[in-house]
Each structure stands twice: as C-alpha cells, then as structure tokens.
Length: 611
Image (cartoon, rainbow, N blue to C red; front, side, top):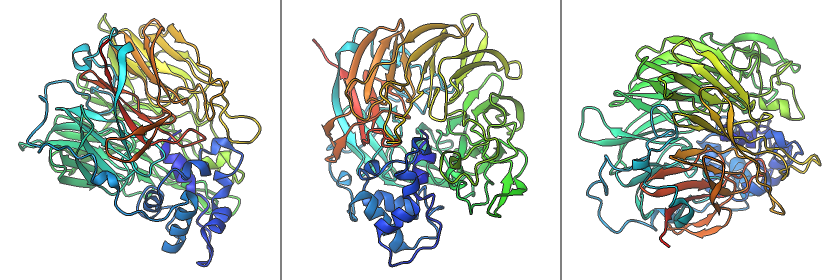
C-alpha cells in the first residue's frame, strides 16, 4: 500500500554481483522476479504489467538518483539501463511533451484569484488535519454534488500511479508527481503555469504560505530523497533546499506543515524493503520530525521517534550483523496543537529487534524544542520488514509483528461540549480516540475492519465536530497464487461518534461484479464537506455519500482521457491521497499500479454543471 515500500522492492534482490554482459531479462530473472513475478501478493512489489506502464526515464531515474538508488548502488549504468528497458519495454524518451503543451496563454502577473478565497492547503486542509472543508471554502452544496461533471484531466508522463494530492491557493493548483517535477496549474482550467524539475518524486502534499521576512509567497514540500524545498509560488524559482536526514533510505512521504515561521518535516524510509536483503545489516533508520526555519531552510531541531540510537544486536543465519532498535517512521503529515504548543505524529512499525515502544504509536512533541511530551503505543512488539512476506525470510525478525502501523495523520477535534479529542484509525482496523489534554489517555477504541498489512484504515480519515469518517481497506488477494485482487473482500465506509466511538453510519462494500483488477477496498483518504463524504476506491470509482450513508454521486475514473497537457492519460485504482474540494471544484488522483491495482497517471477536476 505504501509507495515507499511497494516501489522500493523493485531491486530488492539486485545487490548480488552480475556480469556486465547480462541483458535486462537475465538481470530481472536473477534478481527481481522473486518479488515481482512471485505468487506472494503481500510482498507489495508491482507486477510486470504495472511496470510496463512506466516510462524508461522514470524507472532509470529511480534507479540512479531516486527512491531506489540505494538498492541499485552496486549495479553499473549499463545494468540499470538494461533493467529499465526490460521492465518497461521502452527506450529513453528525452524531454516530456508536457513541458511544452498545455501552457497557459495568459502571462502570469499574480494570483488569478484572491488569496483569502477558496483554498485547500496541505494534506489535511488545516493544522488539525481534519480533511473537513467548510462550506464557504468548498463552494459546493449537497444539492450540487449529483451534478458534478468532469471539467479537465492532467496527466503525469510515464507514471503508473498518481500519488501526490494537490494544494489549491489563489486560483493556482500545486502538485508533485512521479516525474520528479512540481507543477503549478490554473485551478479552473488545468493549464500549466510553470514546472520545476527536482531531485526525486514528490508524493506528499504541498503547503502554501508567505515566505517569512519577504514579499514572496512560497510552496513547501518534500521529496523521496529526504529533501525539503521552498519554491516561489508564482515563478517556480527555487528559494532553498535542505536534506533533512542523511540515512540513505530516508524519504519524505508525509506533508511538511508550516506554523509560525517554522516548517515541520516528517521523515520516513524505505529501509523496511532494503533491510529485507540477507546481506543487509538491518536496520539503522529511525523516524524523526525536523523543524526548519521557513525563511532559510536552516535546521532548528530534530526529534527522533526512537531516542536510542541503533546498536549491534544478533547476527542473522548468514552471519550478517543486525542492529536495533529501528523503524518508527512517520508516513503522514504532523498535526499542530496551538493551544498546547504541541505537534502530534503517528509512527510506523519497528524494523528489527528489539521492537521499540515508540513504534505503532502517537507521539507528542513540544513545538519549540522537540522535547517528547507523551507517547501512546497502539500495537506493541510490531517488528517487521518486507522479508516476512517473501520466500527468503532471513532478515524477518523472530516473532515478527503484524505490520499494523499508522499510515495517516492524527485529527485534532474540539467537540461541541468543548472536549478535545485526538482521533486516528489504524491498519489494525481499529479507530482510536486519545485525550490530548491528559497525556494521550485512551478515550475509546472501536474496530471497523479485520486489519492487516494492507488492511484496516490506510491513508486518511476526516472529521467534523461530531463524527470521524473512516474508510476500510482490508484488501485481499485470490488464494490461487495469481497475485490478483479478490473482488469479494474488503471495503466499507464508517461514521463514528467522536464522543463515544459508536458507529452511527455505515456504507456496505460495493461489489465489483465482472470488473477486472478490482477490489471493493477503500484505501484512499476520505474528504468531507458539510453533509457529504467523498471516498475513492481501489475499483477506480469516486463516490459521494450523504452523511446518512445515501449514495449521491459516483464516477468511474478507470478510463482514458484527453489531457490538457497533451500526455496520454489513463485512470485506474484510487489509493493514497483523497479528494480535494475548493471553489466549487473537486480534484482527485486516479491510478495506483501496485499490488495488482490498475495503473494510471491522471489528476481529474470536476465541477457542478447546471440542469
């Protein structure tokens, strides 16, 4: 489910020596096929069909300077090129047509719309990560939702997934992509204002704000090489770039959050995949939050999720030295609590023994200093790497855990009676409510799914002052070893009362019928406007429900489109980011070519028509 683990597995077995004369097919068969052609769907590695949707340049870039560079470091340039050519069936293409086509015809002289107008800023729309868009910002009513129609499509060249949600501000839309670029589009028409090439892909949301101490407006984001950026929002000019963590497996998958002149950057990693190699000294990465001066990118503090540095522990069966504790990556955007001057993060599983008490947990840090204020662990002893799902389990920790980490942000909510709640759903299938004013004390816990490595609640929930809305994945695969999705398992959308944890709204899974590569699983983040819940599914359908569970609108995104930037556009499975609603428009990503999901590369924009 998580791209950092899924895509990283491409070269999990590519560290052994190889002859330069070997062609791509032989290299793939020797080192990569175990994950990609194997029958174990839980390995999360994309199948060959999904990789064929990628471009040669995209895969080669990932192998040489992108998210998989650490695992391909022992391969020669010829071997990397051979692998990229074989898995994609393509050769180098050079510059993308999207750099020239679809440009806005007007000269940019400022923001097309007022900055205090409709906007969706960052992952969760607000510092509380509520994913709840108020009526004046949404510009869309329950009566208008059934009239939503596709207005435009924008395609990312050579991509097999569309995994970075857009940010909308001042009439512009900012989004990153697997093409290792950040794009600024006109929010109404989708035409391109500017593009900026960066070091690696961007899968996190972008934050928009004035640059402190200047008259510039900037966007802030992170890439999959653990670089944080500040860029001029109007021109695309780089202001600063800071690498926030030197560990070779480090990356930024959660959206950096800006508050009071400081940018708070969550750090995750792909060591959960690379650490699965029997020759790898697993594991040495620790998750962290890094506070940067927004004006300069200079580090203010770094707080590791595991205070203890990894140290040598045992040796594996092949004599490789192992290390621990490790893991507790932060996959999601932090949540800011202005009242308590605190920042909340949710952590992943441990990677190695000994398992940490800080993994699968909610942690609270002081905003000014990074001092740990409190912790609340949901699943103890969850030490896990991808090897636990492969044939060679050498580096899988003894008595490994269930991989029930948190993939989403905590939501800070003030109830109508003034009580404050920190609510979050987990891959275990359990929704938790904590008391942020009493050291993270558990208020209630409610199970809504079976849970699993790809199950439970994945990317994000949404909440207003009364309820939290949670999508359930519980994606499953056929038992015949074909790596195909089980069209009968998974799914369901739930509304829970925030005061009690009681389920007060439930939408049953929607069956796939005869649809190929389909699952009823709801893995993507959900979004909320007054009276309406938006939820995208692995099936490719985007749906809008009234808060009583009634279906109001649906759209099948798994189809071909004519993109405004002249790139071949295809929709597919919806996973990762949820819909963004602002100014009467609804934006959604479509395409997630991992673990047998339908590949795609498109951002879709909808607007309510008149009847």
